[in-house]
Length: 84
Image 1 (cartoon, rainbow, N blue to C red):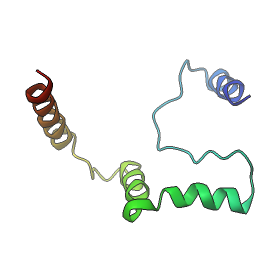
Image 2 (image 1 turned 120 degrees about the vertical axis):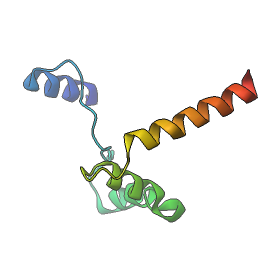
Image 3 (image 1 turned 180 degrees about the horizontal axis):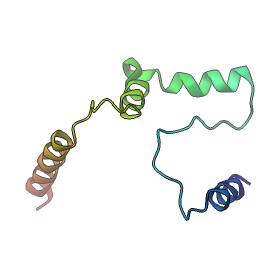
Image 4 (image 1 turned 90 degrees about the vertical axis):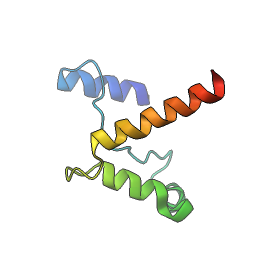
């Protein structure tokens, strides 16, 4: 059913994919209890995911692409050193 709704959305928008966007909170049931449980997972670890998604969803340039590329290059080098 969920996939059908996604396909319907893509047909309506005339696209072959769902564009990149901040994540949605998806719940099985629209009840206060279930929604609170889902939202609370974003508050774990000092609200890491909530903060990350909030910052990533802004157009303020908070995540400089060049800095992200440097971090990714460092991770690649580290992985190459570890795994060969």
